[in-house]
Amino acid sequence: MNKNQKTNYIIPACFLLALLFGLSALNVIMPKKDYIDSERRPAAEMPEFNKETIFDGSFTGDFEKHTTDTFIFRDFFREIKARLNYDVFLKQENNEIYRKNGSLMKLEKEIDTASVENAMKKFQRIYDKHLKNSNCKVYAVTVPDKAYFPWRDGDSIVSLDYNELFAMVREGMPYAEHIDVTHLLSLSDFYLTDTHWRQERIIPVAKHISEAMGNEYNSTFTEVKADVEFRGVNSGHSALTSIYDDLYYLTNETIENCKTVNLEKKYTDKNYDESLETVYNMDKLSSKDPYEVFLSGACAAITMENPENKSGRELIIFRDSYGSSIAPLLLDNYSKITLLDIRYMNPEYVGGFAEFKDADVLFLYSTTLINSSSALR
Picture: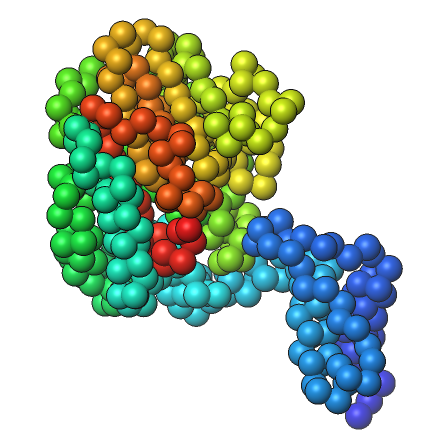
């Protein structure tokens, strides 16, 4: 081997060693993150080093998780891997996140019968205790998750039978009038990077639901673009953190004049000032989840009062997070809307937050929650 050939090997080898040692040194020097923003979860902690963790084998695995979570430029390297899988090797999934027409989604592999039955039992308990002997009209909307649309189009990668799931919900809630919204939705009505529907795209859904409940729907809205790059939960899980959505919200005079009260805070926080509450919480746009701009995100009980509507009619919505963005679009037809989330409160106590008398009652839940209902109290 001549001198020039040796040089051709030595220079790349030295560069590689310098890169490895440099990254290792930076990884030691740089402060460790205790929270992974892109995946919305705590980083794995450094395991305790002692004879027990060494001999039981837990130290090695826990240390690997810690170093993986806290490695410098982690998101950068994860996105390179994701881009290779999606765009070069043409894989449909990365980190169990499926990409269809640019939209990122986690697939439900099969119906969890026990979970669906659990949700139906929780709803039945609410009906038996609060609605059975009332004058309330009861309705139900099952919102499909994003994987429903490739399934509807015949994509074989989606194995969950949504027709069977919808049928189980209808059979499990015979006391409710079921309102089908699937024909009004497409994949483009949902955020690319998140699980939720886009508020500016669901006016036809709100109109259909409202009219099915006996209302004339004449609401009009102004569309406002929020100053935020919205990276939903599937952005981090897929490792495509450079992709983001624009986030819009809809407003009108009714929404702007609405009196909103977080009942959970009102009854538990002596310093709570309900006069500061609004339908859209702009502070949430800079939070880890900008979707919480809609009614401030997760909350056990919240009311919206419409001073322009003198009918006295009330709508009570049992809901998951999809209800946060559609509820403001239903406000014109009611004097008051109460939203109850039994992920954060025992169903036995919902009577303390709403009076079930001559009201419209809507159960609005996504297939994701119904098929994974352990979150319900």
